[in-house]
Length: 266
Image (cartoon, rainbow, N blue to C red; front, side, top):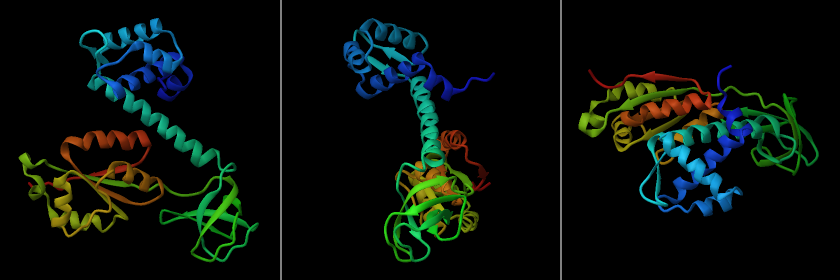
C-alpha cells in the first residue's frame, strides 16, 4: 500500500512529534533549547534529544555547536508538504463535513425572512442562498433583502460546485530576459479566459502590464489563486520561472487541475 502522508501525520505520534520539533526549530532557530521544546510539546528532554539526533542524521536539520540548529532545505520541504496535507484535510472538514455547526454567510438571491428554509449554492465564486431546493439546505438566521449578506444556520448536505482550473505560464527572471521575453499578444488573449489573474515576481507583473492586463493578485497570489480556484473560478497565474515548479507542486497537493502555457518568445 502506498504511503499516505495524512495517515502518517495524524495517526503516528512519532511523525506528529517530528513535525512539531521541526516547526519549533524553524520558528526559533538558531538558538534552541531542547528543554523549551520538551516543555512545549509535553515530552521529556531525552526524547527531544533523540528526535534532534535522528533529524540531523536524516538531513532535516543541521547543528552548529551546542544548542544551535538550522532547518535544512530538505527539512523545510518536508514541513511544507505535511502542512499542505493538513491544510487540505482541514479544508475538507470545513467544506464537506462540519456544515451543520456553523453559520455561513451567503448572498440572498431573493428577499428572505428569518427561519426560512433555503438552498445554498455556489455561483461565480460566491455563495448564494435562495428558496429553490439545492443539495445543501439550511435555515435563514436573519431577515435579508435580495443582494444582502444573510446568515444560514443548520446547513446540511454538500454544496455543489465545480472547482475552477488554473492556467499557468512562466516568465524568465530579468537575467534571462524578464518581461520583454514574453509574447504579450498571446498573454493578453489568454487572460480573456480568466476570472482571476495572479502574478508572482516583478517580471510577471510587468509582463501583464505590457499586455494591458491588471492582475487581481500580486502579494499572496499563490494562495489567493488556489482559493479562487476552489471557489470555481478560472484562474491565470503568471509566475517567474524559478518558482514555477514549486507552484505546480502546490496545485497538485491541493488537487487542482492546471494547464501549462508557453508564452516565452522563440
